[in-house]
Amino acid sequence: MRTRFLSKLTNGEVEEYLDRNDLIFVPVGVTETHGALPLDSETVLAEAFALKMAEAADGLVLHNLPYFFAGATPTGRGTVQMTTKDGAAYLDRIAQSLLNQGFRRQVYVTLHGPAYLTVGPMIRDFFDRTKAPALYMDLMVTIGTVKDLSFNFFEKFNDMAIGAYDILGRLEDVPLNVPESNSVSYDVEKVMKANADNPASPLGKYALQSGAVGYYFDQASDHLYTPLLKTPDERKTHANSGVAAINEIVEGLDMPTVVKQLREVDEYTQNVSMKRYGDWLPR
Image (cartoon, rainbow, N blue to C red; front, side, top):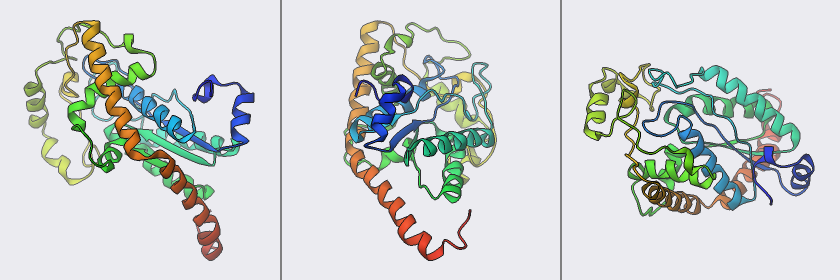
């Protein structure tokens, strides 16, 4: 295909695609302080993964969804905060439109810790209303299902973020020589200590990330440690490492099998669950 991004296709191209397939990937992002990386880095991560998944499984991508629940990062004034409820309601309207258009199989993709607070409830409520099983791939969880990865996910996180910009043709958006400030720290031990000293830290173990207790980072720089990039060559080296990691993850996920299983869940719902229990299942 000329492109996998729905909004970059013509209407005719989308209709031609829908004549043969019904699969769309929806990367859900965030706009938040992220050290020396741009505010949309976790949006770009989700979009790059969704693009690679779509290429592997012959799907389209609905992108440009960057404003959702950020979590603890509004201490950085670049962060755009959305409530979980408003974000879920917005996604639900998008999901309904996509279903009406003919995208029976929808896969929502995130790589942002608190994203599940928005996407998970929407997935379940959408299913109860429409009986169309959308899939949520929370990459914070999904990556752990890939067997025999050749790298540690957290050690490669920044490389994958930089590589995601490269995949989308935006590598030059990653700045060089960003000075340390309230928003940026290159001292990883300092960042780790600041997070450990936050009074919310001991309570975080009682639920999934950001779901146990509300809190804010003390400084914007406490969110994530990012590398100091001095030259275009250094940036490209990190990007190459990240692109390789993303490709390895997507290959390990076996997306054709994943979307086949999503189809099977839909068929089971229609042919078994609805026939047995349809009279009293949620409407």
